[in-house]
Image (cartoon, rainbow, N blue to C red; front, side, top):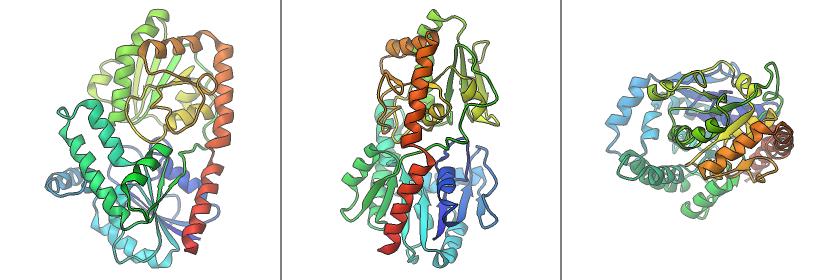
Amino acid sequence: MKILLVSPSTPNRFHRIRLQHILDALSDEHEITGVFLQCARTPFESPSSKKDYVFVKPKIVCLLDCLFQLPLPWPLEVSYTSYPPLKRLVSQLAPSHDIILVKRVRAAQFISHRVSTPVILDATDAMSLYYKKAAQSMGFWKNPLFVEEWLKYLVYEKRLGSRFTHWVVSSPTDASHLEHILPAKASVTVIPNVVDTTYYQSYKKPVLPKRILFSGLLDKYVNKSAIDFFLSFIYPSIRKEYPDVFVDIVGPNPSSRLFSLHDSHITVTGIVSDIRDYISQSSVVIAPITVGTGTRNKILQAWSHERSVVSTTIGAQGLGAEHGKHLFLADEPKLFASFVVELLKDDPLAQKIARQGHSFVEQHFSLSVMREKYNMLLKKVKNE
């Protein structure tokens, strides 16, 4: 099958890696041409084949588009990634492909109404639900842009539901929300985030005792709020029990305030060349997420490396993991800290939890799971 893959970002094995996993899962059986936009500060890999197209939009232009289009009814994220040349190319390439696979709601703008090729919209997350939760968590009055994005995405997703019949999200929570707001004719399929268990595995660096890892895009609210929650309310209790504990905070675009916390016990790395180095040497991986939708790649990667995990219930939503078997779950700071301390103290317990998490991810969140579910959907859409 010839698939035209359209995305507002480029393939990446570090963050926002679902796009890369889609390519990994489908490229052996299908002929995929990628059309990608690059306008972020995060690093990206070269196109996966000579057939791929990458458009580069300068960040200043992205910001100016947001400013000029602020009064318009679509979300700022859509304005940020608007790019007419990409849309024109998609229209030119569409007739020679069997299916167009659109990654993210904000990339739906690149599909002209004149395009007749069947479309699958991999929204990944229900964006109106994400911004609603973010606005409620932060307080409506503190960040009115979150409220605006929530309301604009709500209208935008409903409007896209009248155009695109086949939607994909990564978790049942997002699916339930979209099924409630989209037209009845829209079909929502859950295809979870996955991990390449052959790529993410223990290697090179030995586990370092008493080392905690948090990773993510550090300019994103979901990760900024998570690490603030951890450092303010959880970390002090851990340090009281283990004065020599170390924390690695790994990911692009940390704030200057976060960088200022860098000391002999807290390492703030910024961009790193290979996240696997940090996962493989960690004792415990944490996901103290307080707001968000979808599922957490950081947990899947930790399981793939056979590392024990402590998460909030929001951080582990959509995974179906069992507390005390695959990971530890806690929303209250002192309880969260106590589970981290327990895993640092009890190495046999940490190894047991890590092994069970590894088995769980291989069974439910491997590339083969994504391949099977996507192939079923592709066959269904093509035969309609």
